[in-house]
Image (cartoon, rainbow, N blue to C red; front, side):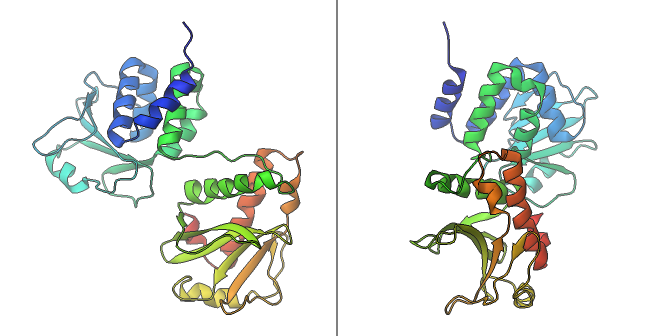
Length: 307
């Protein structure tokens, strides 16, 4: 009997979408595949670990980490799994599991500041390493990768040709792949991002907001910032005002760098032809789009937002 494992895991993701579901399926895969378990533990703790007592939801009074085990040297180890929930339990677990050599790991789908004692990991990074490993050749693990992508909303950069209308939604998804998954921005949907003249998306991080998209009449990509303290920190506003008529190999800033009453500052992409060429590879297209974003942020002194 043949089973389409890709369809199986995609269907599973339709119903089993919660953090507990992800932990349950990861637990089952760890218990059934020793190589995957070692790979997962090494990723979480940055060292080779093994165990004979891998436990799901180990209870210690009111504390219940998603995974708990002892390594082969009898050190306590725990892993807390999150997707979007920000109730992280750091202090609680440090209090309940506080032996001298206790090891803590945390893996989530959102950025979080480093924390003493803890290994902080992301599902996107785990997916990248797993997809690049030999383990992906196992059909079950390949299905798990598909499942994990769906649960964590992880998208892959796709080839596009911006001379074709059908590539417009691909372009936006590619922007999200870079800005959300690599640079930890969030979509901002409180302002209208598309109309008959332009097609794009607002993004935000901390107190910085910007728009990226295509100005349709020119068929060119722009990044735009508002001249407004509620959209752009004051120090960056000053930098923006010093960039009128600037040109580089990557972008240009229009001479009249204003837009009606909004005071928008625009950066136009110079290498858009790469995104309109069927002969260019996915890697080449991703490189020029990412290069454009990075150079624009560097030019206004906003590199910290790309970390």
